[in-house]
Image (cartoon, rainbow, N blue to C red; front, top):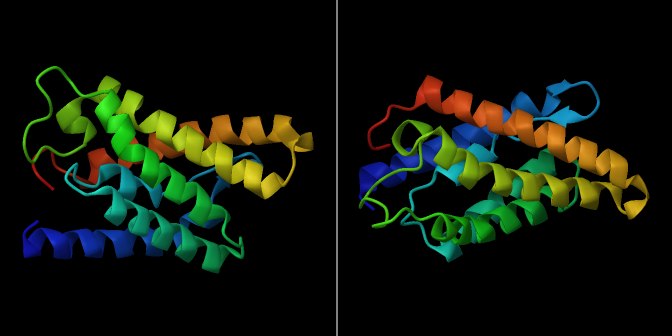
Length: 172
């Protein structure tokens, strides 16, 4: 990756984390719907990012959210899992002929249906693991599933909205 692109990625990473930690983590709809904005960064990283870098980024972002949220390791674990599964998900939905070299993962470039099949399952798994770890047992499985479904829809919607508001359809 060229230096300019790396610097932009680092700045974007810090902005996503700062916005999440300082603002978004306090926003919820009722007591079951939460947004995890920092996931947008991981989901939109270039396809060329390797698994080791993804795991480090996932851990660091989750760990940072844990530090500010007093949630010891819950976000780190769920986000590392999301980062680990990301490339497998991309491989499983590769279009015929593969992806265009240097293509990014924006809704504007790949289409809404493609982005839904890419991002929503990853967000759902992240949220399921997060809420299961937070609950600590399966006695609260109804609440865990309700939180997972509602928060996944909310996070996905915010992810799409952020792309339309702040990203152009070209290269990032």
